[in-house]
Length: 168
Length: 168
DNA sequence: TGTTGAATTGTTATAACGTATCATTTAGGA
DNA sequence: TCCTAAATGATACGTTATAACAATTCAACA
Ligand SMILES: [Zn+2]
Ligand SMILES: [Zn+2]
Ligand SMILES: [Zn+2]
Ligand SMILES: [Zn+2]
Image 1: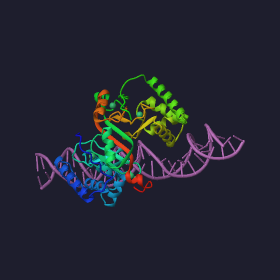
Image 2: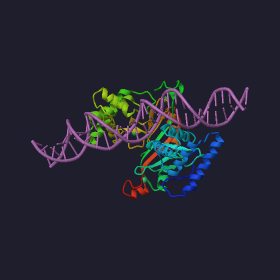
Image 3: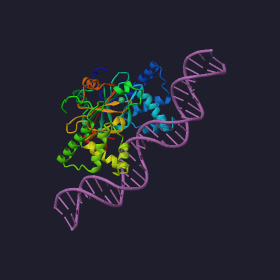
Image 4: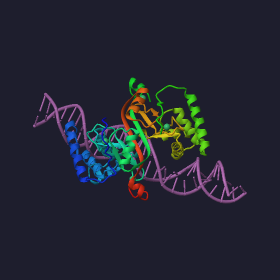
């Protein structure tokens, strides 16, 4: 978790075609390195997320897959998305029940999102922000923060001690 | 958003009956001050959240309401929960699609949650944490963090400039 | 090269979460 | 008392997500 430089994306214009192909190449390489199977559906789902360059619901992704004959039912989309999230190629944006391609694949980071409440566009910043860092990231991309949400997931003491499930 | 002292709750034993009645009294006072209508359903939903002292799904809350004849359909629960969230008496935990009574009502704060991935219990910390503060909060209640999520909601430049909706 | 076990995908069905809409009731001010 | 806005009741529906099991594909290995 390095204190990396800020690179908010998602509210800026950029060389999009280049950004898609670069990210796909990186993903390809990462999967090869890690011995992961970057199958056609998974590849295509990441590409869709990159092309849209915004958070997409699983059913939005599914429609695209269906249109291309790559899978017809919800599990196809969820499985591919889960693979991408599990392997650091995409993130789930809880606030929107949606998914977005990771803007910093390969960098070990904690995602932080700036989510526009009107257009639902999402910018990803690169590090767990202190208040100042988050505010600075928002300023840098002309984003006005209304509300911040921090959610840490893990295990409490009782659950680490006990066989899983006995705490609930 | 003051840098308030840490008070993680939710993984600790405490005088629960007292904590419920205190919180209800605080809520009562806050609603009176603000001219809000703290109706029976709203009151009871907050009480349920406080009694459970953990995050509850809207349908869990609804079952309780139904058992008590206080509302039979989903909107009854969602309306009460939305009221509590809007007025700082509860929070929505996006990660769980669930709701939890605020541990610090009246203090203007940004909620940060420690969510156990096994038992789904939730501890609320009191301030937007820098990395160190969050880690310290977790240590203080014997919570092992796997994953942190930061979500900032607001408006991007284009959406502030344009009539709402034109950005989506 | 044929076997085999694990991972992936196909398919059906259903669970869980959330909201739009409109009718009805309630509370509080003119 | 009458009027209005807020809150609630009720129906129906939309969206998001997963369980379960069958079929297929893939890579490792005998
Ligand atoms: Zn990322
Ligand atoms: Zn709170
Ligand atoms: Zn636990
Ligand atoms: Zn916007």
